[in-house]
Image 1 (cartoon, one colour):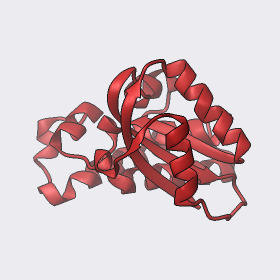
Image 2 (cartoon, rainbow, N blue to C red):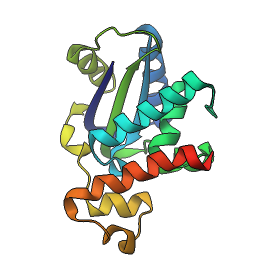
Image 3 (cartoon, helix red, strand yellow):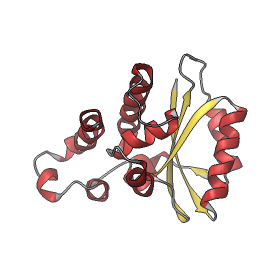
Image 4 (spheres, rainbow, N blue to C red):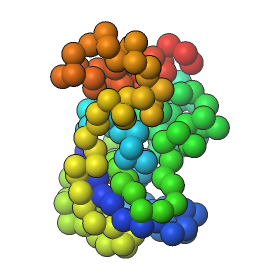
Length: 172
């Protein structure tokens, strides 16, 4: 089961923020990955990253030790954490964040919206799924240039990100 949520708020201390997520993750036996929402191009982007990461873990072709970090790598379109974390990681200050909550592999328990609300409350964030919507600027921040963007119509912009996610398997 996968649940995705967008939120916004003021992250004053990134390390403390991530520790709270880690604690929540352990308490609820979940995998939680958080992203800078400025680099997310819709729910399909996150779902594709999760599907690729789960497949890599099941096939034992993963390059990280955790499903969460594997999701981050795929979402970033990079194969190195030293590139993926600064690119996709949350940043200090007032901004949007994207969350994906995933059950441990083999667990199909439903993840409730109430659980997401508890997480956001613990982090002092306000739910706002609009931060998940991408646009041309999102593509540029992701590293896709104007020439590449101009090869598709606006309604296909998301496919450029999905292509980058899929390419991670090839560059392994």
